[in-house]
Amino acid sequence: MQKLYECRDRLQAQMLHDALAAHHIRTVILGDYLSGAAGELSAIQFPVLWVVEDGDYPLARQLIDRYLGEPQPDRLPWRCGRCGEMVEATFDICWNCSTPRD
Ligand SMILES: [Zn+2]
Image (tube, rainbow, N blue to C red; front, side, top):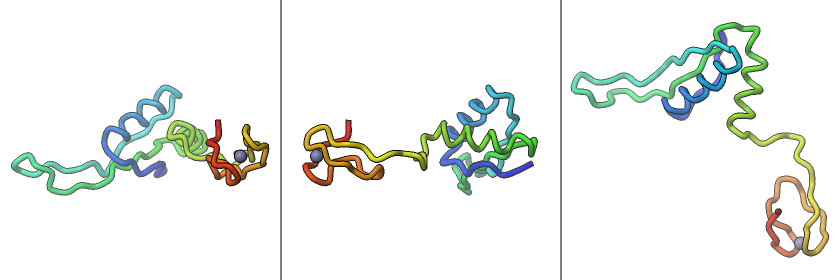
């Protein structure tokens, strides 16, 4: 079993669990919050998603990155539609004329 992802909350953990299940990857959610005796949250921890089969890890990792929309390293520079300048991939507006990337 391998640690896959530290989730923001229980809802996200469940969504990722279900998304991976659709690809036949088994995961478990651990480190969930504990309910206090009176029903309030006594200890908040981030739920952690673990992949059950180690062999599934690389695919699970890729699916999570895609699912969460993490920035892709292969983003390319773009050309401003207004002034024609080339703009670095990390910028969403033109450095020259402030036109947003379309
Ligand atoms: Zn421009």
